[in-house]
Amino acid sequence: MKETLGNKILHYPWLSREAQREVEQEALRDPAWRELLEAIQSLTPLLQSLHLTPEDPMSEEMLAFYLVTRRLSDRPLPPSLATLFARLEAQLEADPTLRRRCEEMARQLDALVRKFDAPAHFERLTGRSLERETEPVPAVAEESAFYEVPARRPEIAGAPDRPARRPARRSAWRWVERGAFMVVVLSVIYGGLFWWSRAAQSELERLGFIAPAQLEVEQYRGEAAPGTSEAERTYQEALQEIRAAYRSYLGLFPHYDAERLARAESLLVAVVTTAPKSSPLRQEALRQEAQWLLGKVRLLRHDVDGARQVLQDLAAQEGPYTEAARQLLAQFRCLETPELC
Amino acid sequence: MAVHDELGGLEALAARLPFHPDDQEAVVALYERWCTSRHPTDLELLELWLYCFVGRYFMVRMLREPHLSEVELEQLIGDTFLRLRCQLDSVRERDRFVSWVGTACRNAFLNYLRNLRRRPIPEPDDPPFEGPEAEAQLAREDLTRLLPVLAAAVERLPDFLREAARLALLEGLTYHEISRRLEKPPGTIRVYLSRAFRRLRQDSALQEFL
Image 1 (cartoon, rainbow over the protein chains, first blue to last red):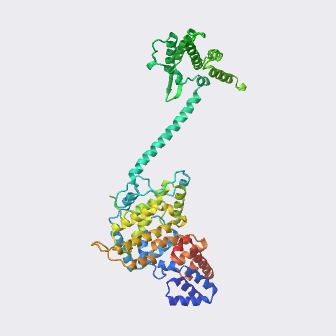
Image 2: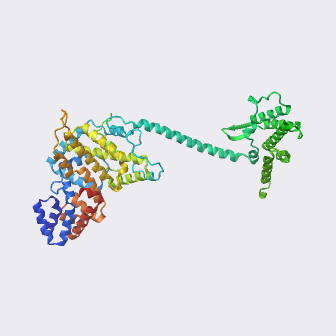
Image 3: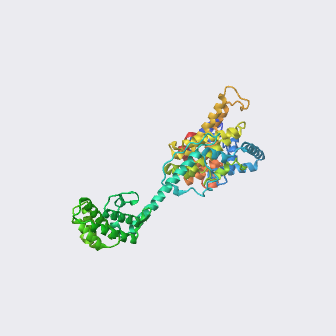
């Protein structure tokens, strides 16, 4: 008796109103059955929508859903849907009338999708090219959660009946992205090479570096202005030699031609000796400038004693290079005896 | 032009997904990941799934309303897909993402039917006049929305309740048959089913169907 009531309760959503009342009356006599009845009553609207009556689970709606879903994917169905579909297929197997209905609906479906091209439609709507995209991955990429990418809202494509405008914009944006990426990559490479180039230089080469501003000549192509003294012409020749001696690729790995440096040194020595300390103001400025450069050139030639001598001479005088010469001498001392610094 | 012999190529799009389109756990996980990371690959998969879901929904509806043409099918799929794609951000409860898409599809179809009825002068190619019956029927039974959501809700039940609920609701077994299949006394089955139905009643994804 109670087992029969159990089945009636499971059929409750699909019973007539009168039959439902009878079940309710029966269940009222036993609190255990009442609990089950109340539970299924709470789901009645949902179960009625299903039209999944125990006697006839295959409504037209169910048949349409089954047919389209079966064709949609070969992947395994979630277990509960697989259970339902197995039941429907058993019924299809057993019922020729139902099978004919199913075949008729399948023909109707074929006619409906005959001219429909879902991939092309999808491409038009999204601006994506499925052919260019890789084949489906076997499982959802777990690592994507760890990517740091800027937030992006889904973009709006063109209306479904006309080609989307997005591809052109997206393509242009891709070029901008690629350009930015290249700039970043080149900057990183250049930064690495610059660091390497700095590390490859000796301390003396670094101290001896001559800023380009100090090598500027007064005239185009370095020709001396008319009326200049012999010392000035010699000084400008020395500057030209230093400029020509300098070699570098994009500012990396700088080095100097030893022969030209030697020539520049002898020219600078000539300037310093031909313009004595008591010479007029202009000559004096030239002499100090030549001394400063001579110190630097000697450093570049790794002639530390020679450089110290000329820099000490410069530091003892009053002039624009006095302080710089003192600092350079202090750096010398630090190089030679680091514990003093 | 490629030849598609199953669902107009919809199955080819579904094959690009790494899961069955009705695997709601995977869909919601994908959606949540996209919400968090905004990774383009996740968005591409979401778009694919969305198109497949919307495409299947309207194909089922078209089978039930055979006077509608494939042109209308394409239009409905396209319009609904684009609208949902633009609103992907606006789902408040991420675990109800699939229900949200299903409801939007249903509303789009209802609006489409209502607009057909509102046309003042029928054009020669217009489908037959649509009565409100189609809308009422859609409100009553819409398995393309409901079945995947119900199946997923059953999957979320604890192991010992899941099988009982599956056998009762989806396999249609009798009370006695369930008891035999699970090798449990009828009293235990009664308790299992009561608990399973109560839990389903509380499942947030099923609320709109109750």
